[in-house]
Length: 347
Image (cartoon, rainbow, N blue to C red):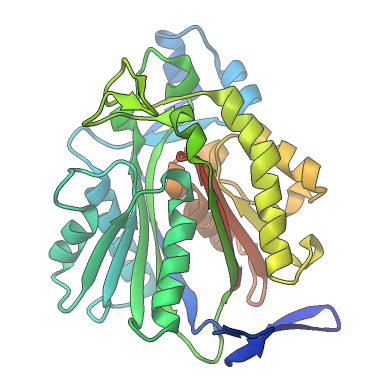
C-alpha cells in the first residue's frame, strides 16, 4: 500500500482488501544493475560516407551522437553474458543461486535455442528456469514486472532480468530512416526477494496490434497484417506513425499508470522512458508538463538500443550518482507491436 506523509511515499508490505479486490504487495526489488556495451563505437560521421546525411542532421533530429555496434561474431547472447560477467565482477556478487533468467530481446541469436538458455548454460546455474520475452522496446519493463510477480507470489527468489540487443544485425544500411538510429548493447538487473524494502509500486501495459506493421522485421513470413513486406530480415519503421503513437497514446498510458498507483507526476523523482529519439522524449515531457531535467536517457551516447535503452539509462544515472536511495522512478517502454507499458519503482 502507498501512503503519503509530509510529501514522502512509503511502501507498506502486506495483503490488503480494497473494494472487494485482494491486492498483494510487492516482495521484490532491483538490487544491482550491470551493463555491457560493445567496443566498436561509431559517430554520426560514419554514415556520411554512404548516405545523404551529416552529423548535424542526425543529431538535431534524433539527439544521437554515437552508438555501439557488436562485432560480426558477437550476438545478443554474447552481450548478455558479458553484462552478467560485469555485474559479477563490479558488484562482487554470485549468480549461483539465481533461479530464473528472463531475457528481453528482439534480436535473438537463433529461433531455437533461446538466449536465456545460452546464458544459463554459460554460467552452469543449476535449478534455473529460462525464458525469452519478445516485446521490442517495451520488453525490459515487461520482464521487470514479470520478475516482480514471480518473486512476490513465492515462485522465485532471485531473477536475472536481461535486455540484450544487436540491432546492427538487422539494419539496412541504405535506409537513412533506420540505420542511423539504432545501436547494440545489453544490461542486466538483479531482482531479489526483499520483504522489508520492496521496490515495485505498480505497473501498466497495453498494445495496439492494429498498428503492428508500423515497425517490423520479417522472418518466416513475408507479411505483416496481411501486407507484403519486401525486405526480409531488416527492420523498417514508419517514423511519423510512431511519433503520433508515442505523443498521443503513450502519454495516455503513462497517466493511467500514475493514476493506477494513486500518485501524480510530482511524486516522480526520475522519468526513464525508452530512448527512441530525443525529439519524441522532449515532446512527451512537454505534453505531460514534466521537467526534462528529471528525465534520463541513453540516446546521445548509445542510440536506440530497443529494450536495453531503459536499463542502460538507469545504469548511467547510477554511475553519475544521480539516483538516490528512496527515489521514485517511472520506467516506461514503447515500440514494436505496437506495445507500451512501464513500472513505477522505489529505489
